[in-house]
Amino acid sequence: MSSWDKKILMIMGGLLVVFAVINFFHPQLQSDLKSESEIEIKLNDNKSDLVTEHEYIVPSKYNSIKLKTIEESDEELRYLLHVSWPVTENEIINKILETKAEEFISEYKQITSDIKTSRENFIKETGEDGATFHANYSMHFDIAFANEDYIAFVFNAYKNTGNTGTEEVTSLIFNRQTGEVIPIANLFASANYLIKLSELSREKLYKRLSEEAKTTHFDSEIEKETWLENFKKEMIDEGTEPEEKNFKGLVLNEEGNLEINFDRYQVAPGYWGLVKIEIPLSEIAELFVPEVRRLFNLEVKEEKIEREENKKSETTIVNKGNFEIDCEVEKCIALTFDDGPSIYTETLLETLKEKGAKATFFVLGVNARVQQQTLIDLKKAGMEIGNHTWSHKDLTKLSVEEVKGEINNAADLIESITGERPILVRPPYGAINGQVKAVANSPLILWSVDPEDWKFRNSEYVADYIINHAKAGAVILSHDIHETTVKAMPKVIDSLLSKGYKLVTVSELFGRENLVSGMTYTN
Ligand code: ZN
Image (cartoon, rainbow, N blue to C red; front, top):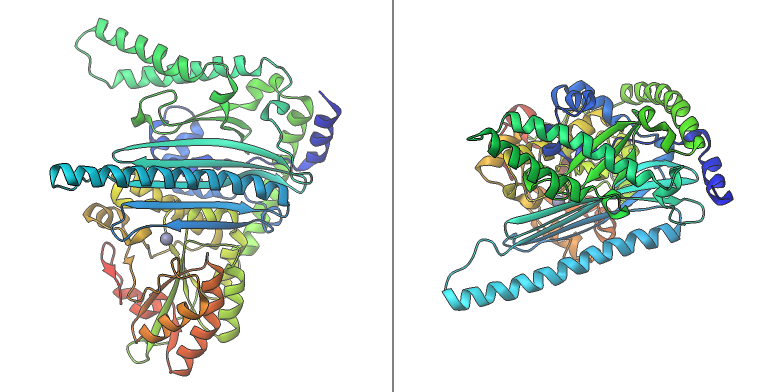
């Protein structure tokens, strides 16, 4: 090991904490992997264990990290983009993350331009429109672990065009001080670690495959054997060749496991989704450099106790909000902010507090996880927190299981942070169909005033639009991910209050007892 490696590991000190974050991405995976380990089973079957899984963030380590988000969509919801990436205190790291996001966005632009051309040609030739001409790209980053000197991200890139989708998971580790990227290989003691990981992966995946074979119909034993043989050779073996590119999604988690994340289609057909296997570090301790091994195990236990204590004090001060204002009598308006929390949310909260206004924040799971403290601050100030799903996918394009995952994983996380399960759901893009209504199991909150603040990045315009269109009972849509929107709010709030409106949460506006699961509400 080089002295540089040593230095990194020393810096990591007693604080190396690694978090099991991938689970929340993979509703499909969770159900697929039931047989893999006890942890998976707990995650699937027991909500309270899921909540425990969410208690992984050391707030002091995450407070300085904020998120930036870019979102694009068109009227028909054919072309949807949603990319968020973290901003740290280190400019070099920021540049690398931003470049990743930019590359993803420019690929999206290229793809949509190609699809638009194909669609035009198709319409010209057939006189009909095709339903498959659409694109949905989303990219989200998670923090896998962090301390003052060291930070690791896992990013998930989802691309859906026409009827096909891919999803990839990659991890990236930085020296938080210098901004240098640290190769994952530096955590391993032996250059042969890839060979070992390949063997272990195959063993686990073969096991899972034979489980699947038990519930698959075959006409004969020979047919079954052939199927197994081909699956192993063509999918599993190929996807787990001992090469770096096949093991780009490695994460160490706080249960003391090594998670290996495979992309959709990498080791199995698409219906397996993203595939994750977990291997207890104790079984492969010899693979890691001794410092990692020793420090990791010791510190995870201490951190856990500390966090549980923090958790208790946080949840007891949660303000449940009050319903003093009767919107049957008063002129009420609900301001709503989507897609956060973001780098601008705390500023907005200060404005709301200063002016005595309430609002509802429809947050994304992927963002809430990083900015947990912001959620706690919102809650304390009496703001309502609604569910804007886990990762902002168009729910009408997902399976029942995927819709459930998008909604429930976000709700579980929000509950674990604030102590209260969100009642309201706002579907991304306002995209709803019968399946979404049935599966959401929540009131679906749309809006009646939309200043299109994502398009008009002009505070003056956004403020004037809202002021001119707002009336009693209105639900106003805007986004706390745009600086221009947050800057528009002092004027909006002053104006509406001066006209005698009460600025309330969505639940206050409608009256909680009037909100029914599976129904949509706009004003
Ligand atoms: Zn949104």
